[in-house]
Length: 149
Image (cartoon, rainbow, N blue to C red; front, side):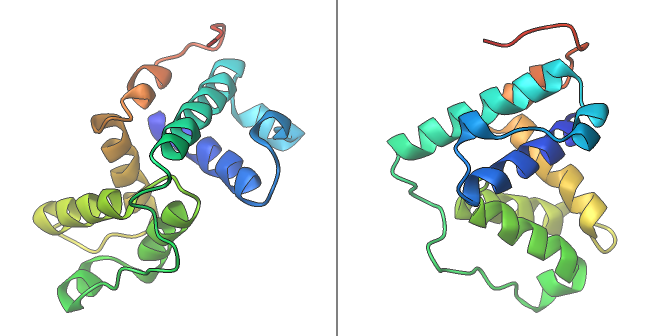
């Protein structure tokens, strides 16, 4: 379920990255059918808090033209699409370089087969739930009639 909210957060972060202020990010009719009001509210709240924290820390740990290159063993496990997704999240400011490193390390320790896009989304979602982004833990349990202030 929290993977569902991550997709919405990524969509909204991409809009912000493209220059739309968070307050003016709108959810299209197609997307509004996929997400209930509580999930949309949770995504807005998460991004507001995340970007406020990032601003407070002056973006430390987020890439500024630096790309982490996978070594041979990592390339054997993590597909190009999955790695591209991690880079995209870093570029959008949703994962720091340290966050990416922890996700990759976890994959290398626990993966028994290649990790594609679907699997990496789940791993990132799990990481965000377990890290200091525990916001998604309670947000994924929303029924649809709650309001987050």
